[in-house]
Length: 131
Image (tube, rainbow, N blue to C red; front, top):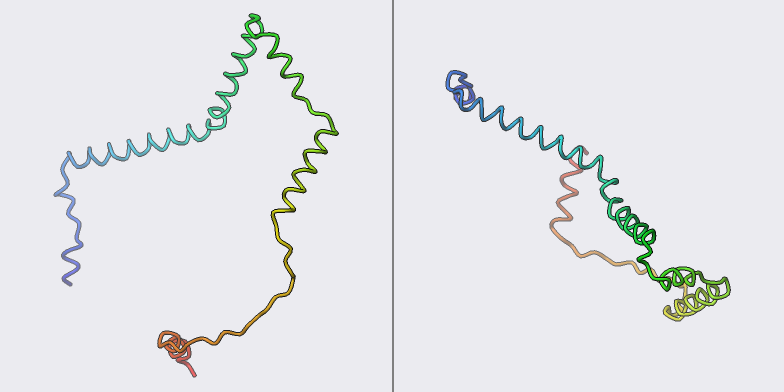
């Protein structure tokens, strides 16, 4: 009975200011959620934008002949031969295999007795009530 009087909602006590605050709050939340949706939908495009700008600037420099001839030569020299790649991968494999010690594959399992605890004994009394 007492709670009924506390939980009763009186619409006559709501003024126009509170209604405008509520409408404005809902409007702000709706606008922010819409903006977040737009940002997350266009995020892949925004992440690719710096790479596109760099490639555009590089192409523009090449078309205006602002890139020195040495830079073009360095790009061509970066290709590695198959023998060099094989030597590098063999060196990495040998280095990685030296990092680990040889271990035996023998496992030892020991049974550990648990100490008595009042907490562990109470769980049995709680779960086994219907015997």
